[in-house]
Length: 360
Ligand SMILES: Cc1ncc(C[n+]2csc(CCOP(=O)(O)OP(=O)(O)O)c2C)c(N)n1
Image 1 (cartoon, rainbow, N blue to C red):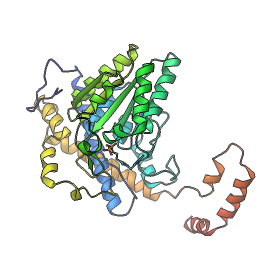
Image 2 (image 1 turned 30 degrees about the horizontal axis):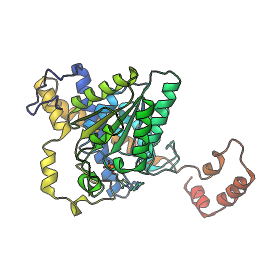
Image 3 (image 1 turned 180 degrees about the horizontal axis):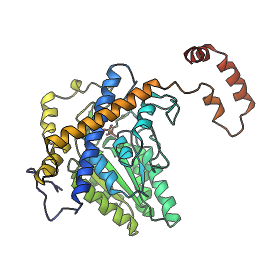
Image 4 (image 1 turned 90 degrees about the horizontal axis):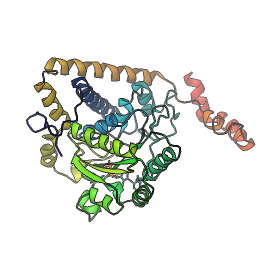
């Protein structure tokens, strides 16, 4: 399904009717996410952060879906959806602090970079094992249903995750109990280096939903308005008591799997270049330029604002100290057990504690 046509015009029969301000807000969020991504990748290459998993080329799928969910709906992410968290207003500084694992990181440097969470933004913790978040999402949805709450859950995962046990357990459960959950499958063509057609015999990911009697749609994930429309329809179904929806968002991972990956080993530059022509940002920009609400000046102003914002967050993050060493012993239990007290005493007398003292 396409809403924004090749020439930038909208298909009037499919236009979801967002205001022009909402459409521009989507574009700005997508561009901001891309600028953040680009800076984090450079910081990793410079050895200033350890790791980053980006969303280059998948911004429409991620931000379009986040925008179509309501504030009270839960997002259960994979690891590539920080754009959805930023869309919900999560402070960029807190995210950059997390990427540095410094004292400002809510996870105190104990998780991998890009594995953050925010309860107040209804964004569950990223879990690194593939597919494990999918049954969690169905559980959250079932809890909302049992409590009679008007809430649903959007769970993100990649095409590769549809080959995991957890995907099938979650789909089965959601189908049987009509859980108010949206399965948001970003089909970006790869599970790291493995192409989709090599990890599943299914022709589409959406057809897997049929086995569980879960209604499914397969749409252009690089068309942010098509994403918005499909996800909002799923939200409506869930809130009407119609249960789950599976949405296959067809897209392409323009960057590496993560900063630890070299995609040139398993795919050609010409393939990537051909997908660049379907860049979701270029598509949306064409549309908003046509409607006279965007131009080169506004583009460079917004880029400058985002660049300055990220730069400032990086400067602040680099000024912050490492998390306090004793924190890992003191914030685990309400009352510290004797063995942690002992370990804490040994640790704070050890060599790393000395470094901490030297720095302060
Ligand atoms: C259970 C498990 N097996 C293997 C991995 C290693 N791994 C990390 S990401 C990934 C690929 C996942 O691909 P997909 O679900 O398509 O998501 P994408 O990265 O393309 O967004 C794999 C195999 C893991 N994290 N967990």
